[in-house]
Length: 576
Ligand code: PEP
Ligand code: MG
Image (cartoon, rainbow, N blue to C red; front, side, top):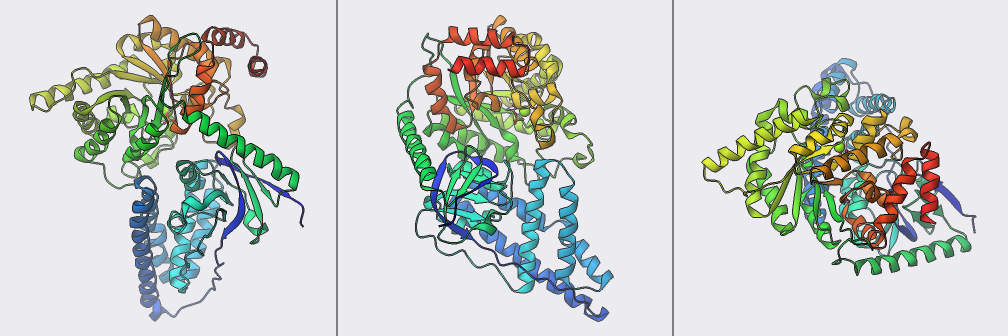
């Protein structure tokens, strides 16, 4: 028996999975360079076009299957692939190169893919690096059609297994029986890769970015996936297996216990009622929100309806999407965040988007909506119309201060008046809130709290902008410090400002979903936490065993620490 081997990658979806490996193999393609006579150029281009057509057809077919099997969120990944397929780098540019260099289509495509690969490798941004993998996969599909080596469907999975693959394509997932998958071990990808998103929504443990793990595996191997720590253990020793089996058992027991809390309130031992809400991206996530006992939606990221498409969603399309959520969530509230496009959230229809040198500091979120009021008004009409069917709250992202909050509110009021004049039913009172995610907004939260019905702190951006640390740049990831005194002071300042005006304050950034920080946030005065639905039960358990008075003492102790290291130490001691 070979000794156990440990691989380290990126923890993409939490949980522990143990089982035999199920390798999704891919036959390597061999590409030859072939010169073609000038008179054959037309024929070669026709061959390329035929391959592109076959690829489009195959991907459209996959999209339909994915829609049926996995729902809209994942089918949208196939849309992204279809868009890549229309990109000139894989169409017009290749044709031009074939005619110019008199070379075969396969070789020209392969060279283009290598160039793309180098360009993307030079970028430090995780998001763009993921897109590189997408382009390479689409290129691979075209090459297979050109070579007549279409990928065969993976072998039938017959028992519970761990899927190991170089990359997991959206189309692969249709062929797999997801109920038998106990984990994913994937060579490429980061936290925002498609596999990561898919695994999270299927609640299957996953580790990605393992580089070359597939080269070390053979069938019959056993794998342990530790989706908490980003580790994969190949052929574990008896002792390791025992430890992990025990941990997995404890995890199952914990989950069973947590389910019992589903309908109980998140109230601390000394009586502070905390609102526990969910962050979602599409209407399909509502099922998970309700299943985990969430009390509402604290952040609906509406921009996902605008991404991966060439044209804007119409008022009707948006209305249908929003109203579906509102009706299902009734009597609970849904906080719709208006379009937060820009930054790392791209959309091809945004005019001038590609030209921004500094998109995180550019025309993002409410700035975009205020510059293009026509787009903004369509969204507001759809949101206001849906307010008639349940409890709708509206929140503006990335306000810099009270001025842009008031401007946005003014537009909202004008749209409301228009709708009422046209006899369209709209709820009487709709609470309007501001996201506090820019330091200038946090520092003037008192002025914003006077005008807003609630404040919600977006810590992902607040940390990024306060510490000047790009949230998706791994080179500076160690500087991304939620415990930095500046962040804690700002959170406290915002909470105090809201309370002074009798308003409530929430946190909807990732900090709210980190159990390390729950008591600290409550101690700083936060009234609501909004997190991915699967975190709700464990957070509820923690809150129900918390004394708010103790949390306040903890917050005071941490606020007086000299640096993040000392703050960490005080936090650790509190937990003992
Ligand atoms: C945040 O910035 O913390 C937030 C919740 O918004 P997003 O992550 O969508 O930017
Ligand atoms: Mg944000």
